[in-house]
Length: 366
Image 1 (cartoon, rainbow, N blue to C red):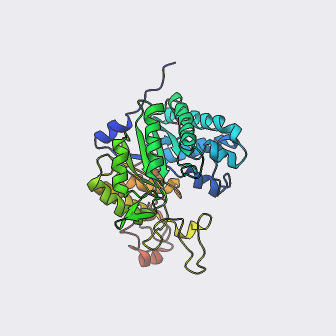
Image 2 (cartoon, rainbow, N blue to C red):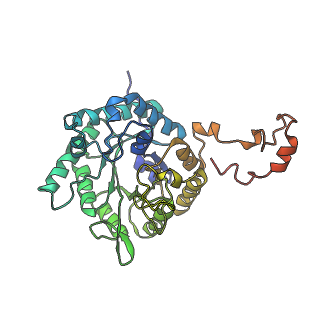
C-alpha cells in the first residue's frame, strides 16, 4: 500500500506567504471535560481514553487547524513522576505520536511533535541541565521516529531552557523544522517584558533564531490584549518568522498573565478552575486574527482555553471556510431576529422590532 502523500511543509508555506494555524490547548480542554487534573496537568487521558484524544484532534482539524499537535505536552519524566506513572513515560509519548500521525495522514494535515517546559531549570536542582537534556533527547528521538513534520518546543519562561530545547531539536530531530515559543515572561528589562532569566523578549527571540529555531514567538500565559503589544514589537525587530498563540482569556495591564487574574468581587485568584468568566468571545478571537494578519504573522493558534468554535473564528478571520463553517451562526433564520422569507408570519412584528440588531456583527461573530 502506498504511503500517504505528505502535505506541503511548514517552512514552504511560510515562505510562500501562507498562514499556518495550529490549534493547541489540549490540557485545558480535557481538564474541563473531567479527564485531566488541574495542577499536575499530566495528559493521562492519552492512555486512558485515546479515543477522546483522537476525536479532539479531528475536531480541531474540522474547525480549521492545519496541524495535528501530538498531545505530549507535560508527558515528560518529571511530570509523570508527579502522578506515579514514570514507568509509562515511553508508552504515553509513543501512543500520542502514533495517534497524531494517523489523524494527520487521514486528514491531509501537518503533524507536529511537542516538547515543553520542565520544572527543573533552576540551579537548586542538581545537574538540572543534564536532566532536562535527557528529557528532550528521549522525546525528540521518538518524535523523529514517528515521522513528525516539525517540532513545537513551547512555554519556556527562561531563555536558558528555550535555548537548550532549540539545541536539542537540532541535534536529536535533525532535519525537522522547529517552532520555539516563550511563555511565562514575568520580568521587565528597561520597561519591556523579559524572560524570567532577565532577557528582553525580542532579544531572546533573536537569540533563539540564531541558535537555529525556524519560527519563534509567544504562547500561553497572555491573552490577545496583552500579547499583541509584544508581538507588534517582535514583528519590527525579530529576524525569524513569528508565532502567536495566546490563551483565550481576558488578560489586562493590571493582570497581564492569566495566572494573576482576580475575581473583581471576592479578590480571589481565578486560575485555574474559575477562569470561565474571563473567557474571550468569538468576536474577540476573530479581531485578534485580523490584527495578526495585518502584522504579517504567519504562524498562529490558540493555547489554554481554546475550543473548536474559537479555532473556527480564528480561521474565518483569515478568510477561510473550514468544514465547521457550514454551521457558522446564521441569524437570518432565527425565529425572532431572522428575515428569511420562509419564516412563519407569526412573530413578524417581533422580528421587525429586532431587525438589524445583529446585522453588523452576524458575519463577524463566529
